[in-house]
Image (cartoon, rainbow, N blue to C red; front, top):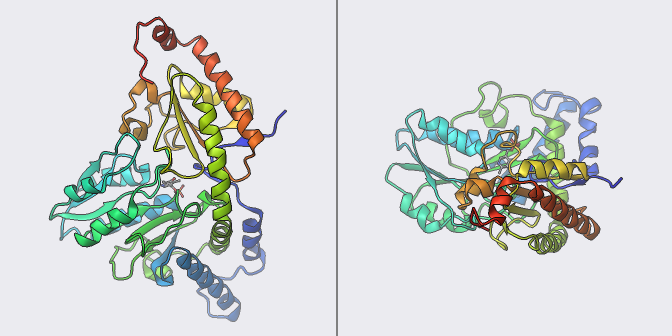
Length: 396
Ligand SMILES: *Cc1c(COP(=O)(O)O)cnc(C)c1O
């Protein structure tokens, strides 16, 4: 039996051993509350500050601009609802895109029910947002623009710097969900003109349930949790010290290995894409180059993605059809629909989000296994039969 090949790193990643070790002292030894007055706690408060300063430095921010949260969803919710609430006298219009994570889309949907107007921008067939469209959508009532840094399903990396530049020149706040980008590709809030940024540790080998929100100095955001003075009084609650220490360690490891990991992942990605492209009637989803180093996403015509996943699982390959949040529902991915895939085709999707440990041997095994399963499934697919008989036209 082959070892499992884990290809779902966009859903979550394994906690790195160094990261696990970094959290341990804060459970049974240095367990004090960072807010307490005795020196034992002072040491721990210092650790939290160190982590905050380090994390800030990795994205070109100041320590006072980093707010610890429970992860990406909380950061997205807080950024968008916090601005909407704070600026509702100034305007009620928000601009975002059709391919955002549900943490952004559903937050915008919530605000629509409360009197806000939201523009959901289209993307092109490669999954890229056109900065010109962003600019055109701005109205006098626009208070916030939220565009994700990199997409969690198809991996496309958006022209964030350019969009940020437009937001600055038009005096509109700019938030980016950078959950898939942080720890994987370089991000600098100053160079990229970012006002607010969401990140989550479990997407870069940190633990689940911890993340941060960067908020540029001077931006007023409504408090998320009332209570104590933690997170500058804006998000009360005793700090999750082990998780915060682990997140800083994970980011340190990620930054140190980023160049090497990127080279390796890009090489493995190319082999995977070239190999899978040989399957008839398939298509790569998302721009071939402007994408995360570890993301591969395909549609195969005439099959159901869910059956493909189950059979891959049997063969020790752990993959996904798209977002972890949409699996279990029968709706095709909103991201694949946004890049113009029709329902039938969008149903036959496969996302392989590869990790640094992947080898060329794994890649060859994956390609062969996917090929075999696609052929097998097509063997008794009514859609495939109609396509082959000419009763239906091939799209891919
Ligand atoms: C995973 C993810 C989130 C949610 O992050 P959690 O920490 O799991 O809440 C938000 N946005 C994107 C793009 C993601 O990939």
